[in-house]
Amino acid sequence: MKTKFLGIDYGLKRTGLSITDTDKIFAFPLETVDTSELITHLKTLIEKENISRIIIGQPRRFSGEYSELENSIIKFITTVSGFFDKNEIFRFDERFTSKIAKKSLISIGIKKKLRSDKYLVDKISASIILQDYLQSLNINS
Image (cartoon, rainbow, N blue to C red):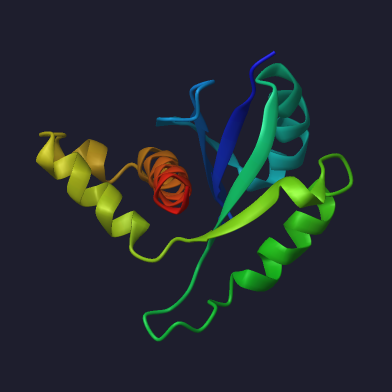
């Protein structure tokens, strides 16, 4: 059975999720979940979508330093490692993904009210993280 990759743009309140096709060529925005419900949601989603790898955004400042969110992400990864293979959890630089997501929405003509929908921006950010990760695999292979 073919598998998919899952992209995660982790946040304290909301977390954006994205998913690949089974050929792992394209990343698609999936949904945004309240972070308080994320673990329960992931347990079901991983099995339902046959997820073989998780890519989690790594927030860094412009200077390259980790953001204050990093400690929460490390705790999250520890929890996920309890039900998913830690060797298949990868991190990927997510600098500027929210800005890129907002600019993408502008470029395709999404109205300002929808562009301010943080749930929409979070899942698009997750898809940017995942697509960038996929592209890095293709460049390195």
